[in-house]
Image (cartoon, rainbow over all chains, first blue to last red; front, side):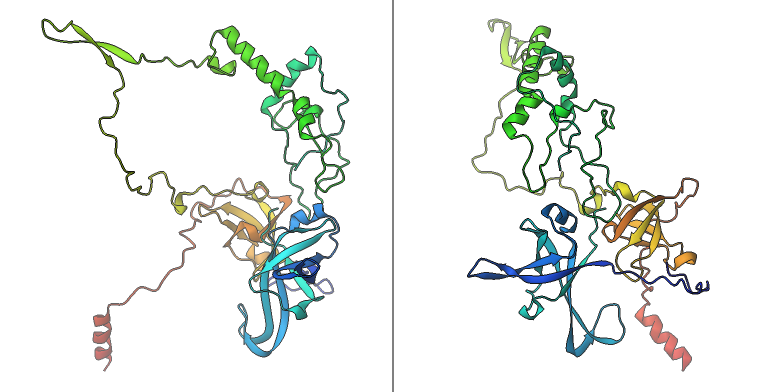
Length: 126
Length: 270
């Protein structure tokens, strides 16, 4: 726990803020063999290997974080930033092995294939 | 979610009269019960190896023949719908209840308990005295009259008074977020920090505090969905937070100045 400014930070035991999201990979769009539907993305969540385990993640927000050439304003930051985010949410499970379907506000770009997607822990139900 | 049963009942479709009585008592309990929420972050929060207690939390006996369970995840259940129907023996229970109702003498009632509250039916037609010599002294009149007007078109419906406004909707709070619980903040400036739930506010938000001196989390409102409740609970029963409600946190807008007054002020300066 990071302490307030008045209290001295104990030496050597500075606790960093942890990763508050689950790592996932964008494996592809929802598709049949010959047709793909880009409005739904398939995500493979780290450590989630069975359909029953995906229950926790349903409804959770996802973020595809990427960088662009031009700097833009980011909410919460004062300085212009190169970081951009595409937001979405996990809609349902996909298959038996823990994959998950997600819908983003705008479809994910194909260059995001194989790239990291963050599945946040909110909206939380626990 | 189905509860995994510790024992699988070996009895098949036919049951003895002995089991009938016990089965009747517990029909009011729901077959599937939610597990008490585990507060860890692991997705598989229910261990399939824990034993089910023999009495449910509400004091009723847990009958394993009433429960169904999943096989190996993925939607297959141990007992099929038809088999569950037999195991729960509802058809025999309803028959028994009907028989009980008949014994009590009231055929319209389905359950023995509701026989106690038997409604006194008013007669459909009433004899009313009528004046006049040769009018027969009384008439049989319908107690409830038919309407004297049947509209040919439906009246345009206005919003019913029953429709609740958003402000009057009941706000629900998760059982894991009782006042005094230590929670983990998931988003915002203070994401990752732990805070204490002070109070449930009328708007449905939680009032939390770091406390500020400990970790810099101020006394603020936060939505339940951005918070994970932990099992650590503090006792806040002695403290009172009556003045802290949604009004307290409402944004204070600067008071509007009268335009004319401003002009006069600037003139005075000159």
